[in-house]
Image (cartoon, rainbow, N blue to C red; front, side, top):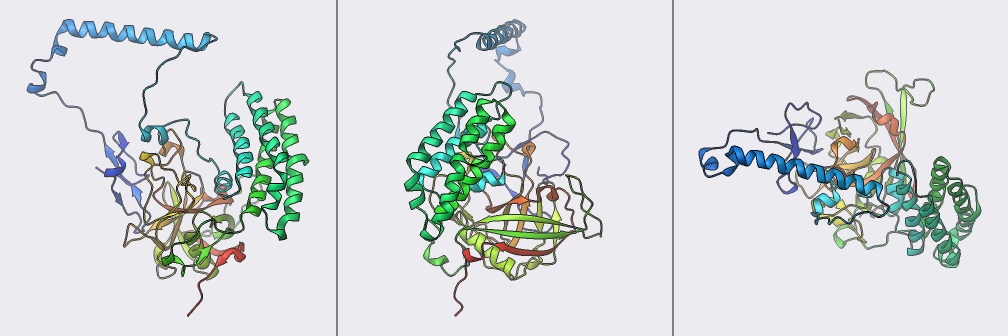
Length: 445
């Protein structure tokens, strides 16, 4: 039995296996939704099953009950011992299947914000990535409740500071000459500026998690700015057959103006007056999805989304598919984590441990819907904002649709507007406000 996403379910359900998952259409669109498999209801065992089974004997039932109680008592004693003893008791842990290790593990490190995901996607030099990874470890340590490991945090900052000072020349000379002066200013800000590494060390010594979080965010923003200066273009060559497609060779920003279809207003979450229109900014990433982002940027430049109506589900806000005549037929484009170029015409299997550089499992992620005609292609123009909800994800925080769509950007401003959008609302305008110089258009014959 299948059910649409967001429909009320009156029976228990579990996600269907990846290799057996089916999909259906919603709202006559090509935004694909996962189906769920109902768990089988219990029924009495048949005669063949019961015959010869000692589990039906009263003595066996009594004995099994005693064993179960003994096992529960031993487990409780081990838990108390692990908490109270200074040295933990070594307990062997069985091997975990890749699906459980990634999709269902609570320790899976996935970006929680669009800014985090975009920063990790920058193809920067190894020295800057080492600094970034040291500081990102602190963001995970800050999630630990109560007694936070401030000693480990300070070690991470000291490591980052050591790399930054010893590799100063390598960091700056890796930038193009025309932006090196700007890079020097950013470098000085990272080391000694407000919200830089020295401020971060001071906040850690004060053991103030709020100050640590603010200084950490500032340092990571500066690192991202430095990395963007080091990455003036794509770090890989596009396949020959796609060289005539529009492509984005870096980052760009698109601003959407949304208006109500019924004439009502949007309510700001941080005070202020209700507004008849709302603005949303999206950063699109050509480093990981150059064809998808390039096609989208070209559509924005052509005004293809102006006046387009929006549709809503419990997990997405998607554009109407009435503009299918626009745009190019772009293949599904996903860059796997740890790889240096995207894969085309294929999706990833999270069940086998594959993760994308640009994850879908972030509130406000932006992706193309699938083509109506082929599973290997994205829609020419229909895209959606993904309304990630951890209640519809594995313990590792990954959506069950992770790796199945061409994600090409994230909502960075106006995320609070997404939850207020209703079916029938309209994109009044979409504008490319930054990054036009990174858009490469094919020469017209």
